[in-house]
Image (cartoon, rainbow, N blue to C red; front, side, top):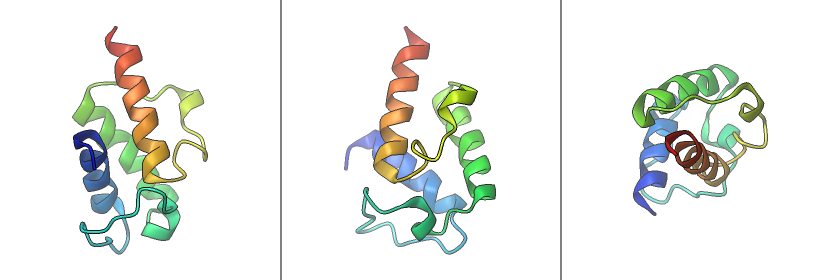
Length: 85
């Protein structure tokens, strides 16, 4: 797991209702199946914006972005690149 995905995974674990084990966290598992509720998604947005110093544009807060750890990590990576350069 690359370092960015590991950081996003840790944020997901903190916001999950019943945190999944860190070991073996499937990047393609749906966030909802990992225990992330809509309130958890709101918290994830705040956590990730603070940790990576970017802002989620309104059009990036979609079910597709917050579908899996992989889709969320890919979006964070793209937003960090886009907003830093």
